[in-house]
Length: 312
Image 1 (cartoon, rainbow, N blue to C red):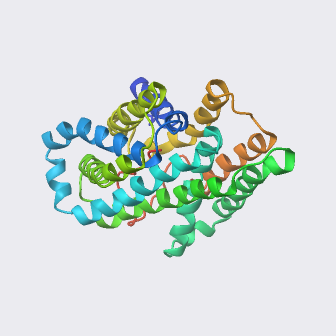
Image 2 (cartoon, one colour):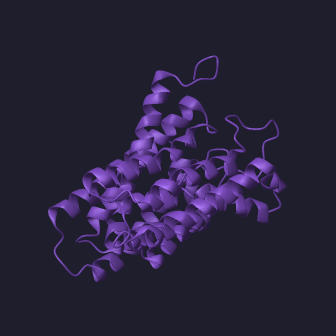
């Protein structure tokens, strides 16, 4: 970060990398579920990623620190990985990857509601309140759009993705209140390992066909590129631009997901998607930040020092 507080060249490169690394998983999930069961995808993705991150976590002592708090690390893994990963896999058996990525982007809307329930009255400020309203109007248009403009969308699948967004909104509060002193790399590595071990027998029992090569390559890409490499890049981005601005790339992820879905999988850009997309992104931005690029002087004590955005 330069003296004026702008992004350095390295910062922009890392920012762009994260926008791609966590924008492309929806495409890979859509390909993987063609011949792999959702639990098998979760097991393979988490175990492979955990093994790749393990040397880094061991070298810095992060894993040892995380193990001291293993019950809360497991709780974080269940909320951030176990539930969302399998729900996303099941949802994308019927839901377009671009729409999935956009609905997951509603995390800040639900996080704002959770903060309000916890007593944060700042959510009621005009800019943030309007952001919440606009964001949920966008969600309604995206979900109802196919019915309004022709076509149909699975309400069950859309509900599963919105449940994923709720779980992703809850996870940082677990980190903030129970794991704030634990290195993020240790929390992530240990939780990936735990969830992988839990899902391995479930994945083996639910996998009833021989996986195709495209699905296998998609699973490897999810584990290596979108999980292990992505988290290492995210930590590098935090060091480069700071913990407040590092997660801003999450507002670009849906753009990547929608574009890749349209180009690679020929997913239609429906009127509902095109109308709802800017409403959701704008609503999330204002609900989460009030339209500010910088944090307010008084930092909230219950927010994570190092934010952990959703890893799709």
